[in-house]
Length: 405
Image (cartoon, rainbow, N blue to C red; front, side):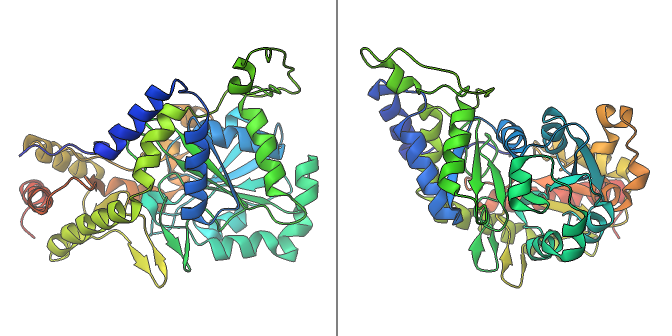
């Protein structure tokens, strides 16, 4: 049986929505992008949402709008995909990496130790879709002790008067945190709508705005939308109308807007997201019912009180094995035509960041999480038979490499 890792969910409703966009004669930013923004607002509870062409471009644009730059620091987890730190570098600031906890997510204690007067932003990451401890993080940045250290370097930062929390919620569309959906817990959250995500637009991202007073989130949305279109005073639709050619450029913007033809895919998916999320939960529960029988299997976190994952990645860890043995197990699994993955190689292990002086030895829990981890396929199209086959294939591979223990 052949099991791919993460094919996109494309049903007839997706095909119909995309076809409607193509037939409309308008395929770039327009009504479908606006509709998708509204659907994400409803799902997440965010005050305003701006769709962009990738998580990375959205994060860079947001950090630039906040005013981070040379000499500023942004705290990020060492255990995440490289885009988290790359966004910080492209914004001109320094990524300050801290270690993870046993639940994969950033350690709040490690954040606290890393804060300096140069810290302008904290970017926690919801690894595999399980929300970070946002209550503790927001309490930390609002504390008098941390506020006293804060040294603003832009009007935006002076207005908020504390470290800003921009959550990397790439994995967590639909996750729950204390009764609310992910995307509404921090000042800003950025979702990914990449091809392998729970909701996809092929490539894309969504900036969720929840800025406190005295900010006006509608105004901030308008400012970011302008930034995403090269700071051009007329969008393409307005400019294309007869006699509407004249425009101005009022700032140093970026080209990060999402197109309608992309938004159409996500629009069809998000309108049936409760069903799709339920199917992902079914896959998780199927794996866990089989793998929990083995004491070497560390089942990924799914719930903690009223916190619930988005069931994006089934991040299985294998107790007691080495990184090399994990790789051997993956090779054995592949022989059965099951595609698995690893989330993630910690950033200090990557050539770019090693060259900047980051050392994996400084992040022991991040390495521990990575060296034992195998991500299993998780998507709505998986049948119960396929789920059993994947789990049993992993068990057989483990027993072959490590022995029946």
